[in-house]
Image (tube, rainbow, N blue to C red; front, side, top):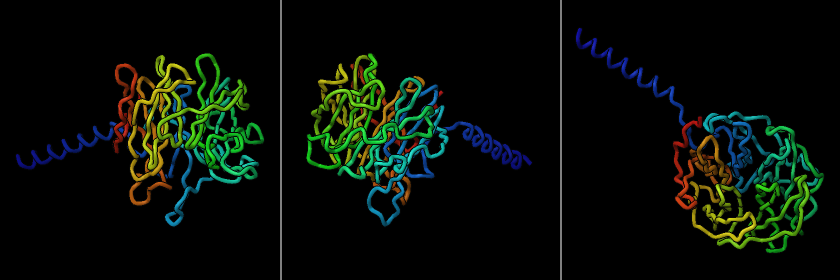
Amino acid sequence: MKTTTKLYRHRWSIFFFYLLTSLYVQGQNPVITHKYTADPAALVHNDSVYLYTGHDEADKDFHFYDMKEWLVFSSSDMVNWKEHKVPLKVKDFSWAKADAWASQVIERNGKFYWYVTVTHATVPGKAIGVAVSDSPTGPFKDALGKALVTNDMTKATDISWDDLDPTVFIDDDGQAYLYWGNTACYYTRLKENMTELDGPVHTVDLPNFTEAPWIHKRGDWYYLSYAYEFPEKIAYAMSRSITGPWEYKGILNEVAGNSNTNHQSIIHFKGKDYFIYHNGSIPTDGGSFRRSVCIDYLYYNEGGTMKRVIMTSEGIDPAD
């Protein structure tokens, strides 16, 4: 009888242990597993995070990027994500023919502007378009009816794919800036309407710049992170001004899993800092052309430099 009682107590203790642990929700990497997602760009708006991604659709026999649309997910805790209806596709731009590549959404005056990379239908090379919506989840529509940036506007390199990976930052004085590029890092001012360039295109000299610029600010420091070399790590530079001069500070994130590319988004949400990126880590089928978004914590040193990101399988705890 005593043995039976001890056995029941043991079983009940195991039951309560699993019950308690099941009540504690922890994130996981990748954060989206039912679709392949890439090139994350996050927007904090009204106590929620909106995660905008590309959608990798390449099958195992297609060894390049097959991307026709962008996706959007939302979360109030960075762990539980809700997928929304597909908000934007390449075919929504009448002047584009292919390639829903890296993008970013930013809010201004109650409207949401989505800057995207596509292949132009008539001007050779990649181009940058902009779509607009009254909601962070769309639907979005082409704001211009034409490209914002085309390959014939940028001359720092002879390649046809240097107009990639747009990122937009609105400075404290209200001036908006567009950064983008591949092998050359470009930037220019945007007019307040967010759909016109406002001045000349400049370049930033950065060590081993490949692509994927991202601008964020903390305190008095501006940070320009970017994909470095190939296969890509993430490196970063710092400045006291959005237009530089930029001082290179080193590697922030190592090569991510079995993905040749590495594309980051950095946000501050509910008191913590997050590094959002992609890798190719979904078991068996992941890879450079079937990527997946992950999230880990970002930490700063005294003086403002950033600590190297530790990529984990466990991910983050729910934000509260």
